[in-house]
Length: 329
Image 1 (tube, rainbow, N blue to C red):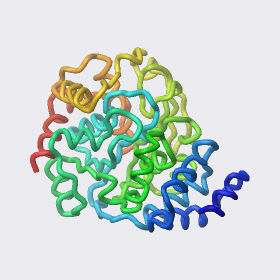
Image 2 (cartoon, rainbow, N blue to C red):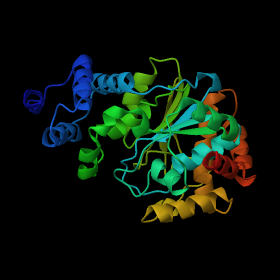
Image 3 (cartoon, one colour):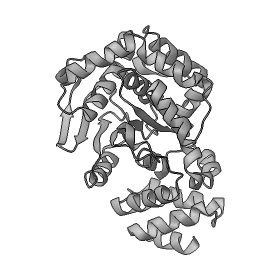
Image 4 (cartoon, one colour):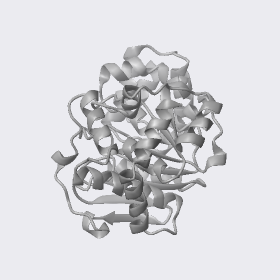
């Protein structure tokens, strides 16, 4: 690693094959914590390239414990995290609203590294038991329309960097990798990024593949549609700049989507929204994200139609039932 770091400090970029091999070596625990921290820091100091990100992704997917959920036409709804905004769990709530419409969701997630509550923190607080058993995950999809893929259960390579990431408590390139390495390789993706450069990297990578995708970045820094301002949307059809008023929504204040100061705070907000008792702003944010996610799968449906489907899921308590079924199974 010392030789690799010396080259990187000279502003060298890694090739796709070099990046892949380094991550395989990291997974094999060939490097000490100090070297790992230094390596991660390099990519906080300068942008990661498409080749580097693709190489890291290829390594994680090669090493991952795979599950075959291809019969279900699933969608993953996940953000990079690391936006420093401390919102409530928007992508996780969105996932349950989408599941409540009948669309199958294979949600990939992890514990929080740089915010109060990640998707794994939230589900664990509700009593969900993480699993990588394929038959169990299929049963979850059959009964609840959603399964949850807790990243450490599927990516043994992540175990080697877990303590270092936790000690750093900063967003690293592993935040960027997370949304790209769902071990079930879903046919549909609705992804959020904490900056525009990463959104474009995702677009470069995903446009070469066969899956349907939408990538969002709110221009004021959120890794999801926040309705606090405009956002960029990348799909196979191209790039759009969308303002809240373009989709019949009103701009909201950042404080309206604050997630509290603990997992307990976030869980309380989560349950309140699923009970159909969220604020107007909270509801509209998750419904808007759900509508765009549904459009990824059903491209011929209008945003308004998808928004109404999402409303029926949330206020008809179908999203709440999806969570209850998932935790109960």
